[in-house]
Image 1 (cartoon, rainbow, N blue to C red):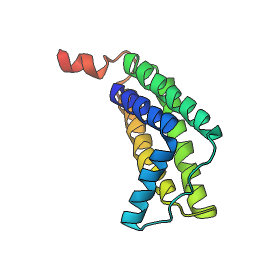
Image 2 (cartoon, rainbow, N blue to C red):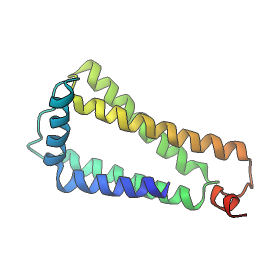
Image 3 (cartoon, rainbow, N blue to C red):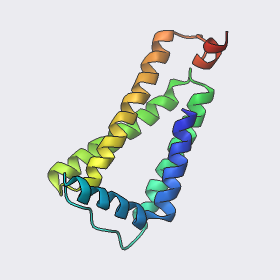
Length: 139
């Protein structure tokens, strides 16, 4: 989860400070793979603030769940966030415009949702009071 915290911090910063450049990179991949249309570039940054806030929340949740994995609520909020964004990308792709950027969103957030769900299941199977994974590895 600490690795995810780092990834969210870096990607969130890139999207905040270089949002147009990030979309240009995604659009160049769209041109290369030809799976879907490029997404129009933003001329405003209103939504960038909200997405940055979400990324910072995910950084915090990732760090909290790595420190106290038995507190599954952190993982559940993380999971719900990834499921919501994946569902949103699917909806937009099939009901508005088939932009390649939406496929990128699905391709990143769906695997992340499954990874977090795997953590939830693993911790649930370990049972209450079980030592965190890091402690088990060192004993």
